[in-house]
Image 1 (cartoon, rainbow, N blue to C red):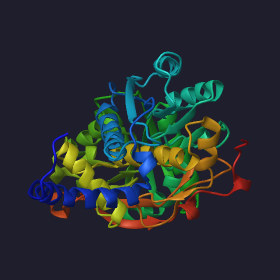
Image 2: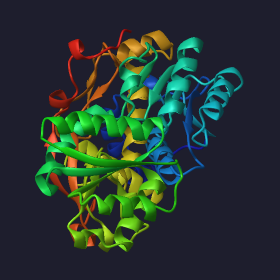
Image 3: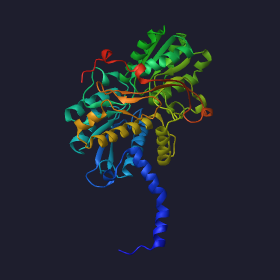
Length: 413
């Protein structure tokens, strides 16, 4: 080994001092110690199952983006428990059969430690059963099906997304306030759409909402002209879109083309997102929507996340980036707390744990149904003048106010 001169030592320490100080800060944030930073051991594998093709494909790519940012934070500091973290991706194409096939391959062939992802409710429910059978933790990132933490709950599944009931309790009061109480619904004929519709109807009763009609549409519909025309004939004050992804974009294109806003017909729904604005042009943004997260949330954790996505992908994170990032962070944090990747130990580390959900209020996983209880935001869509996020936040509703109680839940873990 060559001796290091005093001059060379000063040059090296000057060049690396800032990085070392930043590294110490990240270590404190992530809770990593010297032993955990040591490289070695087989990688920790997380299998992400998402509809990388289908009308949800744009959102699912952002789900993976967020998860990658979280993994990078850990791997740059030595991983978790001295092991690097690896993401494996699979496309379920919004098909439960394909989702089961992907989950089985992950477990049997790739030997993943954890499962994560899914958008469609039927895919989430199917993978949940596989996870329990094969003794794997499954973190559902994006399905809002209430049954996942209700009648179909199981010991191995955690749900990061607010469910449709939570969303409806937060959003319906704002919809009634903005648009009155004569409503018509457009609903995709899937478990996801039906869950939204049922939650909207239940929450609407307390606000005197009159439902004057509903149109059921196939998943992946592109032409909404007939359904929107039929809705217009009923003279509603609000058109509720129980849709998501490109279904939602195409419905909003039809709403704009038919100029329903000029007929004083409002628009809104339980789940909005940046996909409302980007394909349409932000000037056409409209409506009141439930929001999972928003870039204007001014917490330290939220700001770190935003910068991480910008640094890696050069775009402002979407709510789906948030779900992928925050859910992955909690899996890895649970492994760190448990000191092992053992499924039972990691489940125990998650149950009842309160954490930084990148929101202003509390975030925690209920031990008795594995639902992530969190703030639900409601926003009014605007154009570019709103800047970061493209929504004016109308309400931030604490999770405990909308998540229900154990007596109201049918979950039996």
